[in-house]
Amino acid sequence: MQEELKAIQEEALAKVEEASDLKELQAIKVSFLGKKGSLTQVLRGMGKLSPEERPVVGEIANQVREAITNAIETKNTVLENAALEEKLQSESIDVTLPGRPVKVGGPHLLTKVIEEIEDLFIGMGYEVREGPEVETDYFNFEALNLPKDHPARDMQDSFYITNELLLRTHTSPVQARTMQEYKGEKGFKMICPGRVYRRDTDDATHSHQFTQIEGLYVDKDVKMSDLKGVLNVFAKKMFGEDRKIRLRPSFFPFTEPSVEMDISCKVCDGKGCSVCKGTGWIEILGAGMVHPNVLEMAGYDPNVYSGFAFGMGPERIAMLKYGVNDIRQFYLNDSRFLKQFHQA
Ligand code: 2U9
Image (cartoon, rainbow, N blue to C red):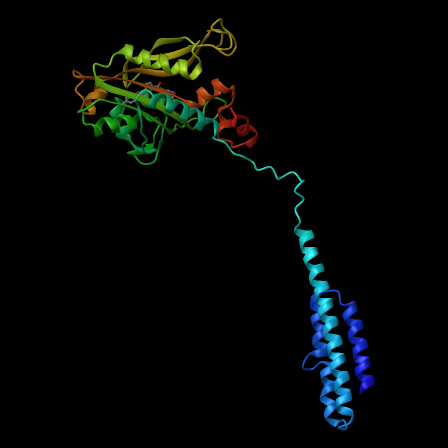
């Protein structure tokens, strides 16, 4: 049995030496020191020894167990350190490595232009209002002096959902709702930005869905000169103090008189070029004094109250301001296009 014990010790120490990982070492420990371990087996045989032999063998057996146990603990420490080292290596971060660039987003160019325009009018005391994109025929057309069979309705070819419901073709219904809400009792200034829909074939300057910002100022004694003053401030703040504005007569069913506002062309400074088609002027928006029918339908007495209104397309303004030549770029979400304006 003493040789057996020596042999077990040799074999155990050799295996411990070769063990390459903690799992293997644990298996070796069990195979020698475990309940069914080879050393345990031998020790179970001690009962058959003579009383003289037992203490001697017992002593050797303890030495062998200790030697195997120490060897396993030493090896365990070595393997644990190696595993930790490997883990540290695998998890080590080379702080000198450049970090992964974090793509920083930015506001969409349209959002920027809309917020710029909003801030401008908020600065002039206008409240920003929004309204439903699915609108009633009454608020989208009738309340705006476009009765059922009015030809101008065709100018705004519409996406009808039912006979009475459609995707709004302009944000004017929001103003009409606001006037009705104030029931002709008080004056107010408001602008309303929002998405509008027209049955149109998309091309570089037209889209079946686009945004508008319209504004309305209703009070006692609002005059055309007030409109011109506000449009002048808007143009200079939006396009530069050096820009001049020009108002041309126009027609809208919901304003009378109606005008279109042009600004002097920045490229040729009004001398005429391809951008302004040789006119020296760039059309920016439409406006006018609120039509008395519209005031009346909303409960405002046109003999007491008057108002002006205007409407513009933020896409058009962004295209002019940032040199974008195709309106569809705003909706394609092509980051190559969008990220150009993050810092703008
Ligand atoms: C009420 C009364 C009057 C809103 C107006 C315009 C002129 C206008 C165009 C701008 C670009 C439409 O998208 S566009 O082509 N709009 O020119 N809009 S006056 O007039 C109103 C609105 C509401 C109650």
